[in-house]
Length: 270
Length: 307
Image (cartoon, rainbow over the protein chains, first blue to last red):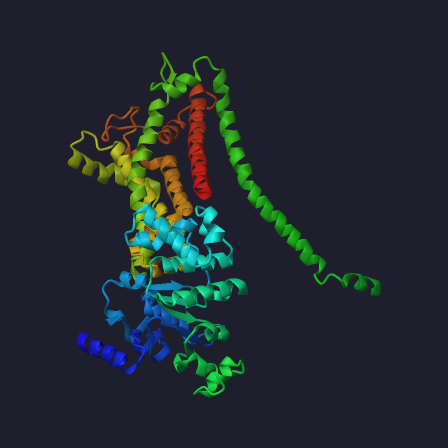
């Protein structure tokens, strides 16, 4: 098993001149809630240090896919999945230390969830969970993450106030800071801009472009233009199947491989 | 006719709907205010029955609060000191809470967060059944089962004591703490759980870092209701504590509580007599104790909220 994974990675490296390494490999992922299958065998790779845009209408399985990735799907009682998800050559389904996996993958939910604690504690939550105690270390990390999430200047005076009292857009940036706090290798953003104004969205998008050099970013978005602005490659998911995965340039160009892609990104779908 | 329809046109709602709405508003307002009225009414009633005792020469408030001599029916020297009864009530309540709070909150956390859906359903049914057992049945268990167990395990001469009453009260408060506590935890939005888990928290870290702080107000309410039940409980403690006026030196000493004293003696005290009035005074005291506990808890909650 290990050798074949190694071979696969080696093969990928040999093929791609720019030494693209696959961070995540998903093979034939099928997910059902009860008897209803919502992902019908999805296979694709996510390269290291890329921004992969994931677009598609509601109910197309975008969020469910992310939840499989960090195995929070385990907490949905009737959800079952088959297939393989490989993160850094490790099979997610067979991982024993699932907490480590979740620390490796930062997750930002569509609606901001400020945990009912101070701003500082919100960001320090994950590092504390993994055992970081030193005050100075935490202070540094909290400042770094809040700065990365373009929130530091607005909250540095009131780190002790409740995170839930921030405005919606600020809370969303707080959740981004929180997702960054455990220094993830993969950052999943699930429609992060749903509750944020366009100006802040642009600021965060700039941040994401910088973060790309440090981590792999999966950007699930309903705003096709957002994927166009940020992602090098885009995945179009529709009703639990991949319609097309390709370079953003070609997918948003006049001649994508699938007609449905053209229709969707140009807003003439259905 | 024409004029009338013309006048009615701007308002699309009929007069009746407006009337009914106003009526409902008043009914609901009355329901809300009635709680205050009832509390004040009860307090007035109890206090007015007790008040004349202040003008009696054989009663002094200092003796009442700080003497352990409770001889309300003595022919020679009547003494009304309830200190032993206060200590009795507090000791039994404290012991029961020491047992019931960790046990009840632990069970609430287990039921809400750790057990599977099937076990959860059956546990909840059993717990609610436990809460529905009448207190006299609990007293009966204390009087027979628990008494023997305590006598055998601790070697105490008398199995009816602080320990017995404390355990029985704990068993009675646990179901309340569990069901209210479980409700409080259930009220924490699932998005908190998902967020915590996605950040790599283990189940236990999730519980004490996220859920307990988020549900603290509800959990405190659960504990308070448990305390309320323990302090106010009469029949079970009357049967289980041994009913002896005594400041307990150890867990296996018998005590008597304020509530049990009222229940046991009020029937024999002639109406309007000093003994009768003092018993009402004991009622006022109970009132005050629960009042203080509620106020303290309220302040604690506010303190937590401000932080």
